[in-house]
Length: 81
Image (cartoon, rainbow, N blue to C red):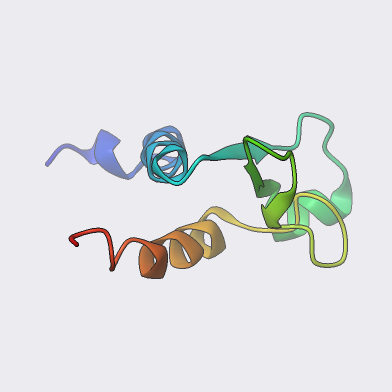
């Protein structure tokens, strides 16, 4: 596997695809600030309702890519039914 498979952009694309399978969108903060830069800058939003599913604990865009990935992984375990 090439080294590009582990870049931030590649990870974002993979997580965006996982989220889309559940009807969610992976969003990232366009306007950065120190708090967002220190802790992530991502969140998941439900497409139908616009409700934030994950990543808005203390403030919007509070999740890191690693946290988004951990949140999405358990959700995919039951898809083989």
